[in-house]
Amino acid sequence: MTDFTQTDVDAPDEAPPAEPTPEAPPGEAQVAEPEAPAVEPSAAEPSAAEPVEVVDEEALLEPPPPPPVVRESPYDRAGRWYVVHSYAGYENKVKADLENRTTAMNMEEKVFEVVIPMEEVTEIKGGKKQIVQKKMFPGYLLVRCDLDDDSWYVIRNTPGVTGFVGPGTKPTPLSRKEVETFLQVPAEGDEEAPRKPRAMVGFDVNQAVRVLTGPFADFPGTIAEINVDQQKVKVLVDIFGRETPVELGFEDIAKL
Image (cartoon, rainbow, N blue to C red):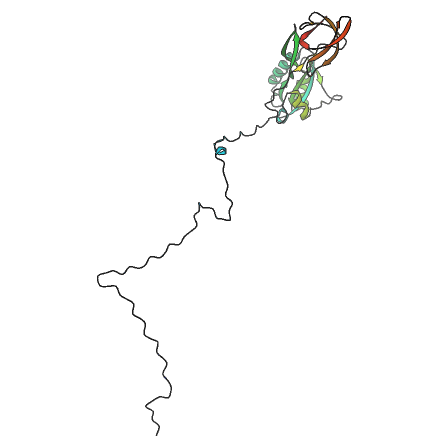
């Protein structure tokens, strides 16, 4: 008879018992070990991959550059510019009459501006150099307007106005370059550069003159050359029976 009291199948191995966790002595609280804080990259510290900008201390103390100067051109104003012919010597009166006529006829919205172009000129008077204001184009005025039949009538029938400048009966507006030249607008980048006065020569080649200053004072001579840019002349002075060229300024000679 088979004995069923003992099994033929081996029982599985049992896991070894876990080691007991050491307990703290009585009266002492168990303290957990602190975890190391995670190190985060500081925002102030640039990473190795980013370039570091070096700032000059003196550059920080320098004032910022001034804003660019916006140059206004009279050409960009409302209307167009036209040249009006008048009697020479009556430009100021014609300007005043046209402005009064524009106001009286309520034409301010079509006739905007009347200008007499002026320029600085260097003149020699009494052997002295002086700068005076002269009309750039005697007998002419510039008028800025919206030209139509009404504005044409107001301008053309102003006393002293003899007509518009242009081919036939059609007035021609001025170009930008002409407007900025006549109204003395400085070129780009030359806003601070003073405009040099134009010299009034008043002399001609082969003209007889008298020297006013220097070692040849009171000597007569004849102008051989005129340099307008340098405001100088070459005068042939008779020295010991021989003509000798002498360079003089406009203020150093006078007409005979």
